[in-house]
Amino acid sequence: MVGLIHKEMVEKKKWIDDEEMLDVIAIAESTPGVIALNTATYVGAKVAGVLGAFVASIAVMLPSIIIISLISLAIEEFGNNKYVKWAFLGIRSAVAALILNAAIKLSKNNEKSIVCYCVMGVALVLAVLSTFEIIKLDMVFIILGAALFGIIWGIATMKKPKKEASQPDNSANEDAPFTETENKEGE
Amino acid sequence: MVYLDLFLSFLKIGLFTIGGGYAMIPLISDTAIGKGWITEDLLIDFIAIAESTPGPFAVNVGTFIGLTVGANGGINPPALGQAVGIICTVSGLLLPSLVIMLAIFFLSKKMLSNRHVQNAFRMIRPTVTALIVAAFLSVIYATVVTKVNSDEATFNWFGLLWFAICFFLTFKPKVNNDKFPKLAPTMNVLNKIKLHPILLIILSAGVGILFYGFIL
Image (tube, rainbow over the protein chains, first blue to last red):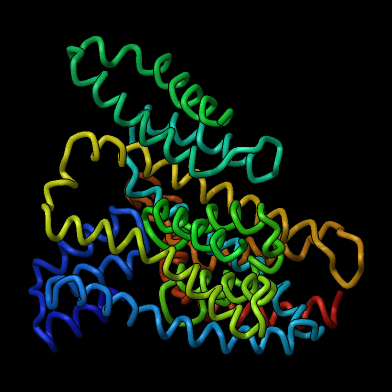
């Protein structure tokens, strides 16, 4: 998609320049929300203000809405066809592979530190327990817990001198995300 | 009211989809399956469709769920209910993007370089990775323990085998060849195979029909 954005926005319409495009994409990827919609909102706002942002993001969604509506008609028609069922059974393995690849690709951007690995481990345990319905926990609280822990951890490690900060690594971060997310679980 | 529920659920999904695309799968399955809107099997089929159609992945999935749930939401005729359902999910997805990006645009880009925001994202990133891994485990479970031409879920060994093949066809290991010289030829071969996700899905559909339909 980035290639397409560059061709349309930078080369053809000259709405933004190269540097700004890199900026926009970096912002779009690191803020909450769908990346394509984030990008559209930003460029739309730059070219034509709030209305521009609105129009651009709706325009990005329209093709999806039309195409998916048509496809869902086809699913209704052919969903129970045995060939379609076999095909989707085969596709399921491919989807599993794609998701695993996405996780691996994403993990390359993660910080390689003990704290981050611990947070990942705790989040994984909670997420698996929740996915297989062993505990009832909204995934959102796992993300919120991690964010909160990140802020607290940032403040805690900021004030300490470097010598001390390296030692309590393990004990501190193993408890913290747990208690945060567990507190929220009760709500 | 199911339409309000759709809007609020997708507002939540939009707000917590950080990193785009596949990062939303755990949230979607948590919400949509949890609320009984769609089955896990249908969601997995739909991830494949959303991946192989143009348009942002999240919007594709949102449209599909809005349409499916909206059809039985109490609005007559069902076609109107579908339209309302789509509007609910899609506007829910859009709202966080619109508000946050406009705030960044009009207020300041410096909001993002705030120390606390940065620290929060430091921990959110590994968490999102973990959530996607959990979603993967759930999908692979649904692949390996499934109903193949019968009403009872059994161990589907071919699903596991084909998953392994798919994974190696798409896996791009970025391993330092100097560190592991013995692995270098294998890694080079893996890195040379370039299979677009859509091709992989089409290939898998063919393999699925062939194997589940005619061999098994």
